[in-house]
Length: 509
Length: 45
Image (spheres, each protein chain N blue to C red):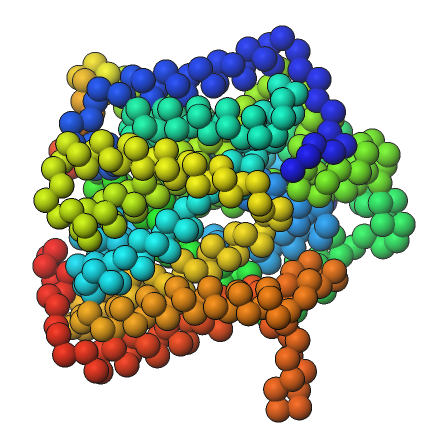
């Protein structure tokens, strides 16, 4: 990830803002260092998160650089379809989750893997924990942080990645979820306000809709109306459905559910989700429009042509005045760090609380559970940093991670939580999670090894002829091809499995 | 002014106004927690 076409000139107060931000994050972590007595204090902030903290941590965690750079990348290439086709389905899912969240909180579990383990046994638990861990490897955030550090301090990319990871690990291991939630609150405010200001500044300076339309005409040397078409003028129903299906990740998103389990009451969780939804939507819309504005700015000759996923940075850096550039860069760092810290925490919980203790050391003391969880944050960070040097494209990685999580977890989890009268058994959960997890990996391996890279669609495609009809399997299609098999496996397990486990939902009532 | 301009201004307004409001509520709560050194399980409201 190299900074191409971006020129950022920082004044001394920009530097002060950035250093204050970084120092503040570490200080918060150190403040909370002595506050944790138990794993629940560390991992779930004693289940005491109230609405404001919930909103801050939910919004900032769920929107990282994949949104900031990914959505603006789509806006840069395809215009408002980045919002309407890719982002809007999430809004519906956020609202649905607001309705469902209290039910999860009422169960009193610590992780969603707990629920699956209690309902279906250790095998399903292990597979679910692995899928959650895999999903929580936040390579993009690490890359993004490294990119910003590289841009700011003119250091090599690998050093930027390491420096950023060390800061996040320091405050996350020190303070656990309290530190994460409190830092998220600052990060939430900085990233949203700075993006709002950047949107206003760029839109007004480029002459509003009329000026941007002219810029896009020059950029394309043709009719730019498709930039303002919700479908981009080319998206098929299948492609829109494939991307919309990735939004189902909201329903089983580990960090999302983690915050719901950490909320003080079910009511606080619902209120927080309802308040977060318009902020999420506005954020996605702003990212998309800034990407589009960047394309117009290139057309008008105001900025050089940037790498597409840096379009937002390029146009914002051009129009924000000194002082606000520092705030904006702190906002970009905040978007990355607030997501990275949460996933480090969640994935460390996957390793120690979800996998190690129940499978290998059931008598692990509370003290050791806490100590090992802190060490596991470092392991999670090391995995993320290592992988950050191998991935190039933001959306491709995200779709694979979302696919593996949704296909593995969604059906067994929701059957466990919401189908109160359905007796659960080990076989159904084991078959469903294994089919989802290994089926998704097999599908992606098949498409990526036997298929080819389509320059037109910028994804891996496997052409097939079935019954005389030529079809193309995209790597993204795994997200709707695998779930029917998962459902079938779950039903076969329900029919054939003899063992009946107590229904967790009933136990919680 | 087109509908897109209005959409952009509305989104910017949400991003600039709502988070500081939430942040104010957070500051009130955190001030109470600091006063009472309350970082443990809070009773349900």
